[in-house]
Amino acid sequence: MLSINKFLGLVSALCLATVAHANEGEGVSPAAAKLVDFGNGWAITNSMATGWAVSAILVGLIVFGMGKPKLIPSKGQAVFESLLETLKDLLGPIVGKHAFPFAFPLLVSFFIFILFHNWMGLLPGVGTIGWGHEVDGHFHLTSPWIRPFNSDFNGTIALSIVSFGAWCFIVLKYAGPKLIIKDLFGNKADKAETPGWLYPVLTLVFIVVGFIEVMSIMIRPVTLSVRLFGNVFGGENLLHGTSFIPVFYFMELLVGLIQALVFTLLTSVYIGLLCNHGDDHDHAPAGGHAAEAHH
Image (cartoon, rainbow, N blue to C red; front, side, top):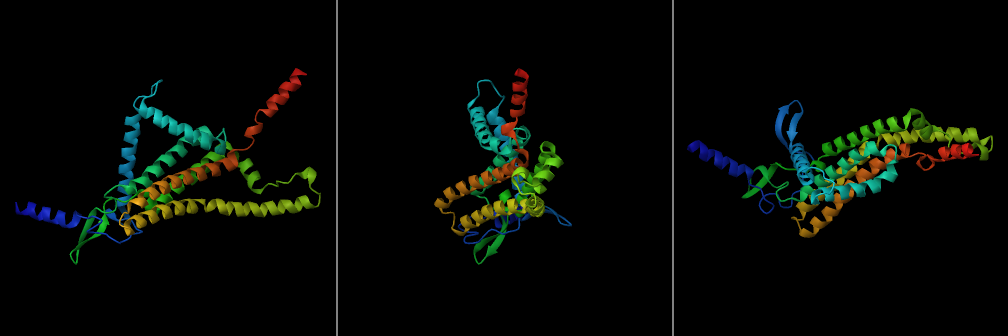
């Protein structure tokens, strides 16, 4: 009985954390708290655990809401199909029709995953429940159990690496090395309308520009991850620093939606820059051949 009382006392001393009593006015730590430390740099952090839990719940909600797909959709199926149609109409012209069937599942996953992980930071208890200790009569939270996945820089880096890896695979599959090299380093000037002496000069210029473009491509994972992390982490600090004023909840709802859309759109644009070539002219050669055959 004594051991149970000690255990309950330890739990109540370490677990109770609320905005009013615990972390009022404090910001969010840039580093995620370690829930389980395996040593040698290996650990399960609160952002990792939150990411797994929210992802499992999200998959469960989609499967439960969709049910078994039917010809006459249920309400859940209709909502999800409406979301897919909206994203399809938005992203299809950007990516291009050849790569779109392959890229669309990835882009939808990015949007839904990032959106819900951004919004889950608005739930009560996120960042305010965990391990801590008393300081001058106030509870000081040192290790929160729940932290939004996208407020951890490691999480957004992982997303950007997946995005960059998928981009490499898709453009190599649907554009090919030859088109990629031509798009990056090829001379875009019309040789028929360019003076003979100027065309070689422009070739050198486009080669230099191509190397600059390669540098910009290499830093895309950094820009994608920093943009998402900065907005979500900044929003978390804003909510904690202002004691969760309701007006900021609405603002963070918009920020969460915008950042999910920005990440998805940028990934789409990167793919479309190389894969969305000549879609408007795909049927021109066939039409030309048909006309010749007719004559």
